[in-house]
Structure formats: structure tokens, C-alpha cells
Image (tube, rainbow, N blue to C red):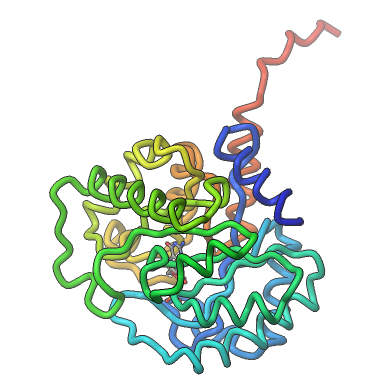
Length: 295
Ligand code: HH2
């Protein structure tokens, strides 16, 4: 998919004229909470991407720094050394694929864009373009979509004591301000995607309120990405089960988000999510059949 087609698809999903896009997650890290260590070797990342595309992913999100609660930052050199070979391997194995880079660092994004010159990338930034001072300017010069995510605090301490007045209003207001800042910095409005940042400085009740009231975020007029896949809040609702046991809750959260207007679903389990979307849409399109004729 080329960047224009991707933007068109994202906006069509926001308008409800197509199904949400499925973004498959590949973490090139030793310590990500679900898939840490599984795709550290570039050929393993490429094989995973090939599989996810076959399963129906619309784009692949590659990350090389875990931002799970309690995680420690890695250096820019370390992040680039993990990411770039994987990006090259995925790009070679899946020509024409739309890739997203999950990084807070402008230097990493710049290196990725340089390595794949001519190929448009999504910039998925869990810091909402705040981590590096030059992020807004860099993003303004790139052609692809930019995901601006809300997070309270940094990954290391964000779950210590997150606090909001009204979590839904606070997150929506922050995202709106951030989108305005991005537009003032020269980022074309149509390229901006917003994300409430499930699990990033949020307690269980915060996450649930944000999912329930997702229309307050979509009402800002930008496409919305939701990443709830395998996250802790699902375990908290099911006897503290670990990430490996959270598939059912992940599908439920993804379908809920899709029905409430999310345009992109960021998931570990592509096949199962695509199947759930097929069922949802088949039911939504179904017509009551004409009476069968007597034989
Ligand atoms: N969640 C994670 C990482 N990146 N990006 C967006 N836009 N939204 C999210 O909710 C989001 C994200 C955390 O999940 P994961 O990448 O699976 O784990 P880890 O940070 O441990 O690598």
C-alpha cells in the first residue's frame, strides 16, 4: 500500500466506510511484555511480518525499545542497532508493505527514513512527539502518517500513581492541544492520528473509561489508533492472568474500540483480530433472508 492509499484507508475507516486497519506488532527487543526475544534476529522479524501479512495485517509496527510499565530506556545507538537491520529485512521480505516505526527518538526515526528513502513510513510515537526536541520539525518533513499518543509520565514510573481530574476530558484536551501544536509545526492535518495510550500512566478505571468513551476522542476529528492488545488491564479483569492468557480480552477490547470509531487496531494477534472483524462486519451487513419457498 502506498502512503496515499494508506491515508485514504485510515480516513475511510474513520468515516466508517471501511473496517478498521489492523496493525501487527513486532517488537525487536529482548524484554517486551509479550513477544520480547521472539524477533530479535532480523530474519525472525521478517518471517513474523510475512506471516502477519498473510494473516491480513494492513501494516506492521516495528519497535526496538520496550515501553511497558517499569521498563528502562535504551540508548539511541542500541535502539537503532536493533531496529534498522529488522526494518531492512522486513522491507526486503515484504515489498510494498506499509511499515510503522514505534520510537520516541527523532534520531531513530530519521535513520529509519534515511535507510528506506523513497518508502513512506508511519511514525508511531508513544511520547506524542515530545521526547526529542526536534521531533515536531522532523515529523513535518516526513510524508507518512504520524501517531500522537497520550502518556502520563515515563514508562519507568508511569504506573506509580497516575492522576486525572476527568480522565476522558483530560486526555482528549491533551490530544487536541498536541494535534494543534503539530499542525502549527507544519505537520499536515490529514497525516495526524491520535491515540489515548491505553496503559500509559492509567489505572484500570482510567483505561476502561477511555475505551468506553472513545467517541470523545474520535470527536476531535482525527483518526484514532487503539492499542489494548494483551495489556495489564485485561489481566486485572481476569484473576490477574498473565499476558499469554489475554487473547479473549484483547479481541473484545479491539472490537469494542472498532465499533466506537477506532481506525487502527494495534494488535499482537493478527489472525484472530481479522477473523473477529470479519464476523462483526458480516453480521453488520446481514439482511434478513427472504422466506424459503415450499418445496
Ligand atoms: N503500546 C505499546 C507500544 N507502542 N503505540 C501506540 N500508538 N499505542 C499503544 O498503545 C502502544 C504503542 C506497548 O505494547 P508493546 O509494544 O506490545 O510492548 P512493549 O512496550 O513491552 O514492547
